Amino acid sequence: MQIHTLILQHEDLSQVIFYTLVIILLWIAEIIFCTTATVRKLRHTFLNARFILTALPIQLFLTSFVILVMNWDATHHWGLINHIPFHRNKWVFYISLFLLLDLGEYSYHVIMHKIDFLWKFHLVHHSDLQVDVSTTVREHPGETCIRTSFLILWVFLLGPNLILLMIRQVFQTFFNILAHTQFRLPEPVGRLLGFLFITPNLHHVHHHYQLPYTDGNYGDVLSIWDRLFGTFKELPVQSTNFGIDTHMDPAINSRFIPILKIPFQKLKRKVPVEQ
Ligand SMILES: [Zn+2]
Ligand SMILES: [Zn+2]
Image (cartoon, rainbow, N blue to C red; front, top):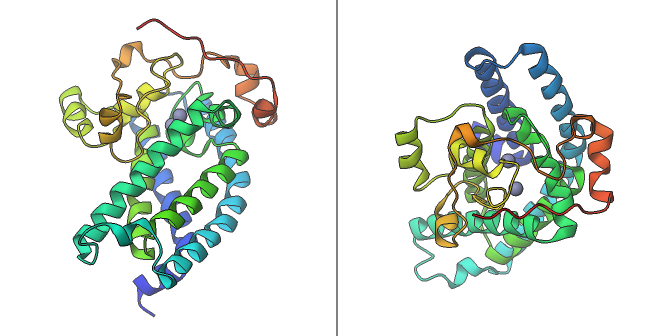
């Protein structure tokens, strides 16, 4: 059996293997090139890694529905893509769907910040006081459920195919993990790449503990949506402090069970800050 056939047949497992490899490689690179004390980093990684155990079964279970919905779309010629002019041209097909899926991720992220009930789940990701590659997997199981359900809905509405979805997944995984690393691009390179892509420099601004920066740079792979919808934010590295103003207590946000309880507690409002 050819390798690409094998990958296509086990799409969910291939995703997990690719995700794990990229995370491990970048985690080792952080140990080598960044100055964080190893014991502190190991403790932090161990905490965030526990979220993989809650996310993995949900992710694998719901991904099978993504495939089901996509196959239903294909059989019934359903989906927005069928109404895009020249969609039978493969370039139009792939580029349009890539952009629309990225717009979907942007919209999902905005919704998670703007609806109180959803924010209580998403703030778990923001409550990390020490953003590094392990922050990528710091996601409340409730959010894993909401995120994958949103993807199912978006796939249903758009009608992509499996190859496009996998290409998209590779880009998304890579950009998402890279955005959380401790590495910063040199300012001119960051600015240049930031015209089009979400770089670590830009995502670090999203992890700044205070408004208006927390509610900016929602993009997933591309930064164009933030520029288009006025949510693009910049902040120098020396002014960036990770966390979220409502949950800065390490006694809570560095312990697994108290973190899991956050969404079920009374909502604390982010403090508006004058720009
Ligand atoms: Zn966010
Ligand atoms: Zn993040």
